[in-house]
Image (tube, rainbow over all chains, first blue to last red; front, top):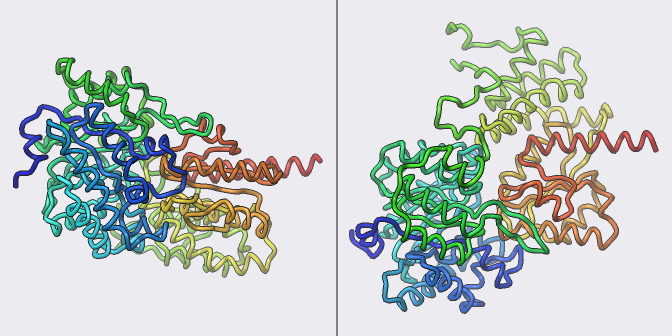
Length: 336
Length: 234
């Protein structure tokens, strides 16, 4: 299947994705606790500006304002029934912005987690998860998204449910997980586990990778973990611009544009093809990242020491992929 | 190791072995085995409070440590907490009857706009596992809801959780409202959630940021001890 995104992937050495959605919308006046997706309908001008700022700063691809636009999340705001509509509008605004440029710009329909725990641990069944993701996927497709973009997933079951849903919508997709707990996802998945899982999917993504998590250093360690599995599938790196700090009523991420430029180069050299930011990554970060990717020559794959030297320490000593994983404190009972 | 170890008969173990086995079974999230273990200890004349602290809290402390150290992850901890809940269900009415000492009380909830309650649920379960009384307000709590619960429940601790960049500043809204109403010092305020850090906790005026559920329990115990010392001295 050819589409605008796979064409870009084939033609380019690297692709610059976008930065933060939430952090940017706060700066435009979003109140804490409110659903950003409501703005697709209430303030389309601000959403348009959000997209435009990313593309003007050099992004080849941006994510739609639909991260929480699934029925499970919108339920909180009494808008579960608007999942398809709000997702559609987020993509429509995106399509309109992307088509204004004379270079190719990809509209990636953001799909975030349901926020629920899947069965058997939790209440969300596989069937219902597929239905929730499918509904949102159809909305994003109707709105003109080029590709669906699953992000910030922790549970492999949820990733698989989305893959199935995107097949039903007959849409190409990419999917990233968030490695925020001792180098693994909250559910304990390592980077190596994810690479293995992705390769076994019936409807695999065009690209896979990591987003959000804890800082830029951790994210690159995760990328190296993917690369070590030897898959040919393009890798996505969308890390946060440092860690959040609170100043005068605002959340501010401490990563500078210069640091994110270093991060972008290291991400490319580590083996990532699609490089962007996540929380705290503003247009000024993206400009520096673009400039660095365009002007600095490709280098050797960085070592862990080079990553921490340039971007700061990891949040945990290990990430579950080496042999230095700590031992459990209790014996496991042997079951007959 | 031989296959004979597959069949462990809990009632044949002495007290010390049984408690050790219950630590293992909590670690593995085996609810029925935990319930059986609790009943056996009660039958042998243990006080409910002793069963709670030595077997259940002891076992959950180990689970908490391995969660903190990145050895166990959310699925295993949920299973362990579920097993503990099975044991607690047996002990709770007995604890009330026997007038067991009260460790402390906590009101906890995820802030407005945030549906993510996995971390909050873990904290609730681990706090209960440590003997605290927990009032769980669930997800998506506006400031009014917190205030109402603080009024009616009169807890020692207020716990707030947020998992999104878009919802974490709401914790400050709640704390600021408490300050305005002159109630801030009536409670220990603990905050947590993936995007947070210690500095953020300080900046918004919380008493402490707790990195995970295990740290939350340690911090809560610490603050309760300080409170008791203060009362004793005062």
